[in-house]
Length: 203
Figure 1 (cartoon, rainbow, N blue to C red):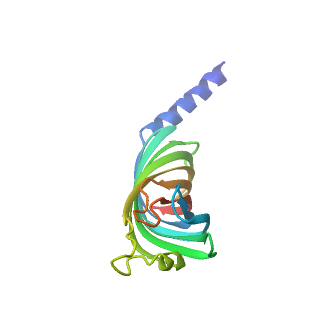
Figure 2 (cartoon, rainbow, N blue to C red):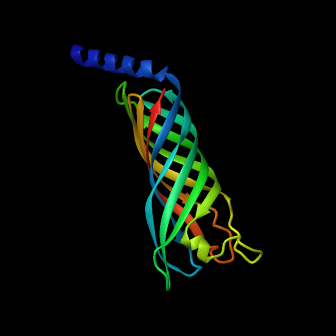
Figure 3 (cartoon, rainbow, N blue to C red):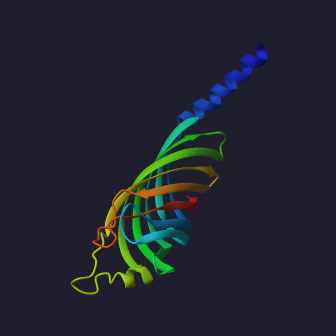
């Protein structure tokens, strides 16, 4: 009985120490992505396949809580995504899109030890398309003349996923969906979506 009480007291004190913890950390992060275009009911497209892209940037993370804790994490990322598109009569059309992304992420985690914290996450993000290239855009004559297609360079979306902190490292996987279509007469049904995998170093 005494041993049980002693163990409960130790666990309670362990949790109370962490319940007072408030952490502000900065970090740099990078990773790979499989973000691709996909079609929603319109257009001439038959198949979409993601090619590996990359992202890198910085983050600020505020964490508070004990055994059960939460984090708020704003980020700024530069992202390149690549898609292979097969049209009805033309195959291997590439679409390469560069964006500046600003995600705001909420995380709910469990402090299992001083150095290990798994968590689940959800975020909203805004994006600005800085550059686009590839055979797909060439075929659609995008903005080359007055009759060229116009695309929406500003859009936003949501992500969900999970990750874990291991000492000063943070590993994360999330899946993102654009909520705004690429606005064009030719491909107004296209959206971006896909998997993002990243690693961050926190200071």
